Length: 217
Length: 217
Image 1 (cartoon, helix red, strand yellow):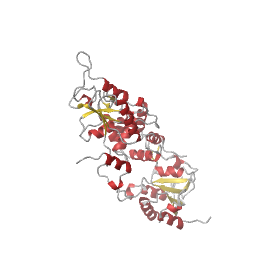
Image 2 (tube, helix red, strand yellow):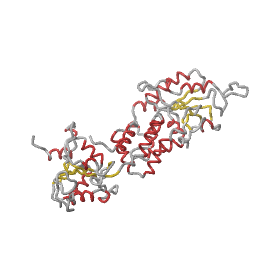
Image 3 (tube, helix red, strand yellow):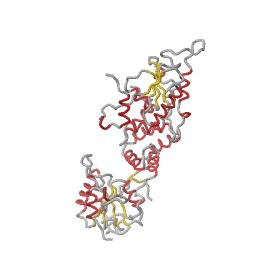
């Protein structure tokens, strides 16, 4: 079978490895790139080759960052009496973009998923529990009780900012069991009708949750 | 608004520029790549940076190739009395993969599209007409009449291997007008029911074409 020239086929194969990108999409992308100037391709290649160079994980919240602790964990103005647990860095960015949350975060690195073989050991659950157990050390080297603005200790509230899908719900159940012994409030994000949606077309589970979670005006 | 670390944001922006890849898909791809080993990223970057280095266009069929003339145009075993006109290199690969075509090709580089501003001048139509007008030169420097296996001259048949969509049909109409004066057979690919399809769900235009193009068994 006649194929594309090897340099093109090679790049198609590379794109084809990415999740959700099949053979045809990979071909389309490569032929689009072939029409771009060489400087564009060089910039893309540069970004690709060096994306991991400056990246580390924040020792506190486990988020990807350029240095540890990350800007949010290092920010003493943020309320560390609340920790929002999210699955992915993207979820943290989504919550940050609301501008409505001033607490700290903890990034698990995914959700529990038995089908994909993602077990609690692969998520940063141990690190989350570690944050709860050890408060900041005082001058005498003793663990101090929780203080506003500190980076450790038992917070007042843990928000489980996980998606209400199968994997998210599984993770919420698991975390609730793990976190129950600590005397703190554990909350989850409200489930209900999304803004702009049409009640008529809402599925039963969403509508049922919206009813159960109804609030006085 | 808190953003991703700059090296990650930079790569997200690069992916976001590609056609059909939005912000969320770009993020998903970059976080997938972050989990890959550095050698993988380096190989991808290398493929990207050098994809255009060895690529040229075949002076005869206008296809992308590593050298000109391309392997198909240089292959004297192929029947050059038939030229199949296709829009893109991918279309040529698709036809080659059937194994049923032994003629030559001509790659237009796209279809006419008034909305996207793609005019006949931007396609390799001039080059196609050039192939018809000039046969190969003989030893005396005169244009020889068409010979089997030669690279020029008036072929017996031109197959318009273009998609039966709006742009393809426009291109077929335009090319037919241009090519009519040359005394040769001009054909187009059959339109009808695709293999494995269900007659009940075929659209009217497809079924109408299948009826018009019916063949005796």
